[in-house]
Amino acid sequence: MNLKKTAIISGFLVMAIGGVGGLMLVGYAIILHAS
Image (spheres, rainbow, N blue to C red):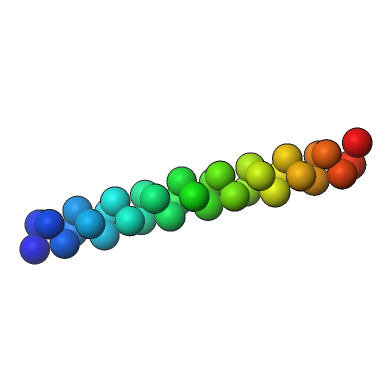
């Protein structure tokens, strides 16, 4: 039970970090196109 909970939390963290990284890349691309 505890291991499953840890796996879900770590998976959620990876998804959150990946989402932030993706947003940063999109923002960087928009800045490059704007300039």
